[in-house]
Amino acid sequence: MLLALIVVLAVIIGLAMIAKRLNLKIQGNADMKVLSAMSLGTKERLMIVEVAGKKLLLGVTAQRIDCLKELPDSVELKGQQKS
Picture (cartoon, helix red, strand yellow):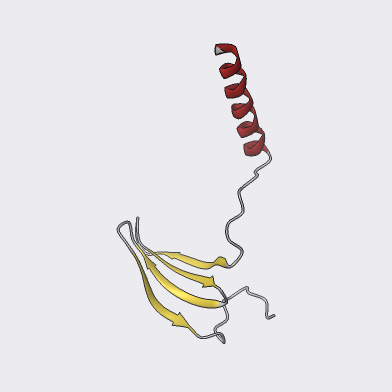
């Protein structure tokens, strides 16, 4: 039984190493995208995210996340393609 546990742990570690080497990541929700982020300090950020087709300006700190404003659809970010 100890040998089976060692084999299972070795397989898990091996698969983790392969995933890290191939840079595989678990895909998040396709309805949520981080469009832009700006650091304001060591633990403070402004982020523009798109959730279900809406663009939101978020204030992110170590303690909380606040929705500061819902941006209009006409707002385009630098480097973003028109659809």
